Amino acid sequence: MKTAIVSDLHLGTAGGTDVLRDRGIRDVLLEELRGADRLVLLGDVIELRERPLGAALDLALPALAEIGAAVGDVEVVLVPGNHDARLAEPLLDGLSMAGAPLALDSTADPSPGPTAAIAAALAPARLRVAYPGIWLRDDVYATHGNYMDVHLTLPRAECVAVALIRRLAGELPDEATPADYERLLRPIYGLSFGAAQSMRRRPRPRDRGPSEAAWELLAGERPDRTRARRAKVRAVRAAFPLAVAGVNRLLRADFDADISGAAIFRSGVAGGTEMARRLGVDAGHVITGHTHRGGPRPEEGPWRLPGGGELHNTGNWVFSTPLHNPGEPPNSYWPGTVTWVEGSGPPRRVELLRDRTHHDMVTLVARSRGIRSATTPR
Image (cartoon, rainbow, N blue to C red; front, side, top):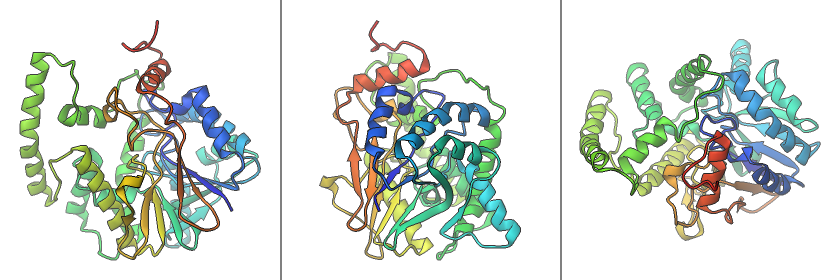
């Protein structure tokens, strides 16, 4: 069986960074998916934190309909992530009502509401919801990877919120179950989704989200800053380690003030590895999304798991300008990846947008926002 895996589409972002809005890019993905025997949408498929549910579905369903038409009458497995965690709620509610535990690969049929709308859009493909992951072969397990937030040393808002809940509700056991992770993460997901329901149906376009803006301020290298702006950046960067140290003392956490690209990479791989260890995932290959960093790249060598297996990340389909500097070739965060799992052998990752330039992507995002950027041709 040939299984195609795509992750982190984030369909419906407020900033227009979900590149599948572009007709040409959708065609590239659709052509790659034709011939798949199964498709796995590995989390953060729909952006449910930046718009009300109905508005997000209005933007996402047309693209999903094209995907369903391209793959035809095959199974599509939707594995919710942290940005579309709401889609796992009917499954979790059903298990709770039945008094059944949440397994590593619990599944459910679409239920009335958003998953039924997604299933209708994907037809003739057949939708199944799996959470927190799905076994694709006896030796291949795929999960969005949002559970790794409990272990990341990156001081992003969601990880700090997890540390606060751990401080109040108790630590994660060394041998953890999915329910142990849900105890820490599900309240955050519920709050994020609830806050989005009171947002504007059509939010104001923005260059970047709060996390991206913070990263650009603390670690970015923009040459166009004014003298006053450069002074502010220096002050913020000088204060940041002190702020992180204060959070660590208050929450008994171990966040790292180093938020360079190398540090983020190390934290992501370490977090995914620790997640797999605590869950006891005994697999030759564990596939995640979540961090948006496709890999491992050939020059990195395998990302080893404690049990002898290997960790993989299937990449993303969003273009985030703080992660891509003009003039640089596409890096490991570049959008446009599909991971293939076949009957045997390791997962195989395909990069479909390597021929697109930085200028191409900036222009595409600006067009999606309905505005002109400094690099958009007139």
